[in-house]
Image (tube, helix red, strand yellow):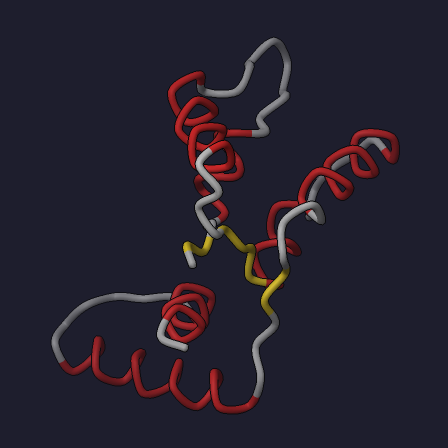
Length: 109
């Protein structure tokens, strides 16, 4: 299963002031859907993508589009693994975010 990240979804569903979605991102995403590649969205990514949407109508449209994908929620074991990932990265001098570590943890299960 491929977990879709905020950056990919933002590019695919962008609708700001005459800025349309990135055509190559949309094409790749549509291709994966057409080929039945298993795709899912982490719950935290769903929250990130929907945060900041000003129009209730746009929020509703985007929510419906995103909920067409399976939503993967983090459980306690994911949070523990995410902490281990963050600690390991820090020891190696790699900067990470809590969200990125949760997504990485979800991807391992």
